[in-house]
Image (cartoon, rainbow, N blue to C red; front, top):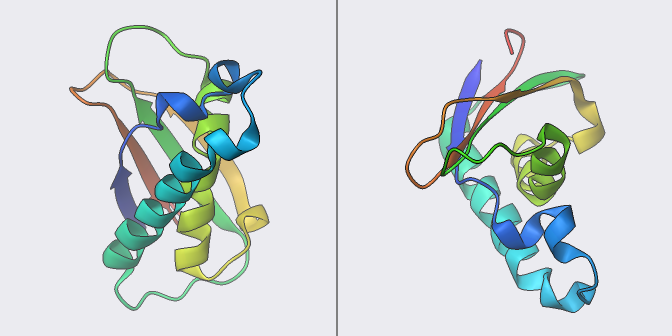
Length: 119
């Protein structure tokens, strides 16, 4: 199993926040999220090779005690997950099964990914 700790998704990427905004206004945040996730996953991978379906457990640790919907957190993390899939050399459709959990708040927020058979 591979464990990757990523920053909590940017507030700009949450679906409820993006309504009414032009897509070009979000491009920089989306690209930054994907690129950071790619680099951090490559660092965690080493020389691991992954084929077929890949189990993925995502635990969102919010930066404060405000409860957020799991589906909105997952949507906001889409570009980070794209970067992780790119680093793994897979299509993000291969993440199966996907488990989304809400963890305890931590200062600054964090998203913990557990990738592999035991996820």
